[in-house]
Length: 432
Image 1 (cartoon, helix red, strand yellow):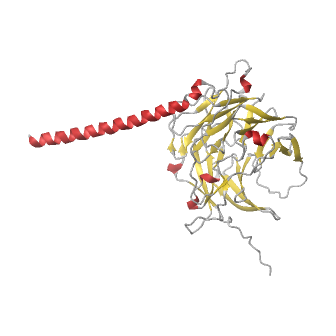
Image 2 (tube, one colour; image 1 turned 90 degrees about the vertical axis):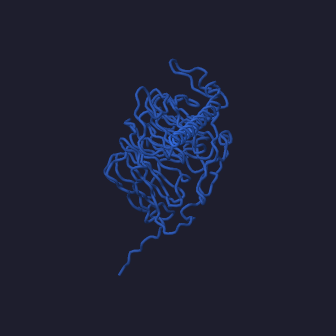
Image 3 (cartoon, rainbow, N blue to C red; image 1 turned 60 degrees about the horizontal axis):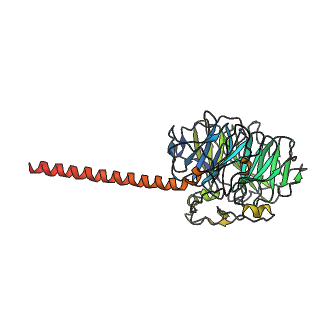
């Protein structure tokens, strides 16, 4: 009699669970733009969501802890003249986020720790080089201030955000619309998928396609008959890939191994409502005390619902096998080092004691955006630290902090005076 052998894996019992209702983000008008973007970007401090807005494009940024109903007047990040199509947090600075738009521009924003009173309308820098809408942006994993954008003009452009300059333009490589772009672990190569049904592995610095038209896949997994776009999220620390179907109501996850059959189905998280988009928390933002190995931020029509993926363990001790050292927020290279041909692996951090954020570093543009020398007619100038308004921003933040402290002091004094008046009334009444 043959006995079926069950493959051993510590991730066999990973399960997904939504958070409680009061830990969701309610009353958010999620964008209805037809686009293959995930519409959501998350880091250990903020969740950003592309939203509906009149007169241009916008996204909302919420502190991670600010759950519950979102005020309808909550400030937005606005500045694009057409809908925002993609957003991405900088992996090396939790206060810096980039946005791409139908208006053909990419903008980079500095998000303050406090909730601003008004909309944020002035980007740190505007990057202009595409001739059609820009649907994809992604930061370099190890080099500081290197940002990639891909547009409907079939161009891939790499930028140095710190100077506002184009580093590289990859043209004549794609014959049709670029669907997606991803970096390898050290940022030496990138991979693209295209409407022409080809996958290309590209060395951006040599501006060469080093592999495409792979003859046979090592594994083929049939999913379902849905025509929704699959959003893949891969965790190299656990070798698990999560597939979230846009317009679908499930998250399927698989473990990847080095030996045949290579791809092993683990489980499917299902819910009643379909997802409009999906955010993915970096490893350093997870709760290691609860054996959380992934956290998704599922977008509904009017809310954002965090979903926690957990490995069930009885021990309260730190689980070394679940949390190998993981890429931290410190860049391994400067932009010019990477451009000159240097590569470096990500600088790793331990999650044993939980992740403690480093002090916020302000993004500074060291010279005026060279693309501003002859702006197209009707387009406003991009903004850099050369602008007087931007250079004053740190001082303004200090003034706001002082005002906030003074308000608290006045409120405390008012309460003290009120208490003294009450005591005086009691004393007066007692002597009558």
